[in-house]
Image 1 (tube, one colour):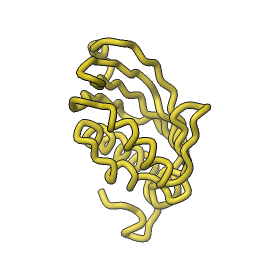
Image 2 (cartoon, helix red, strand yellow):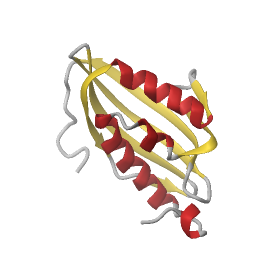
Image 3 (tube, helix red, strand yellow):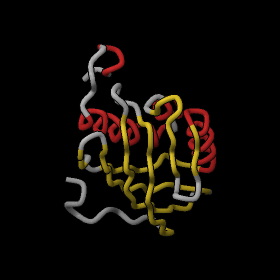
Image 4 (cartoon, rainbow, N blue to C red):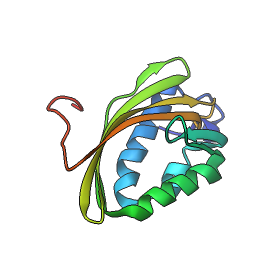
Length: 142
């Protein structure tokens, strides 16, 4: 699947959302900030919560770098098939991350809006955090 910006055609929302989920799932454990930031439109907004907006690629880079710096082991990630409606998609996820070798589980959903080239113009993250290593329920990410 190529990027719409490279081929000059509109990238389908489903393909863009699948690329977003796949990239986060593989980039998070190895702390690949560049791969994650490359998904964002230059002026796209990333809301880590509704009270923590990060503006543009520089803002997203700052946020992801700050988060990854706290993690002491590779994260374990699960991302669901995106649910798509027009130019918007919702992607559910489950992550176990380790800070000072102590596990923390994050379960959430990111609502995404894409531009014509498949880059994120807006990402709103809604999540729940629980101490400990809690695996996703069977069947949730099949």
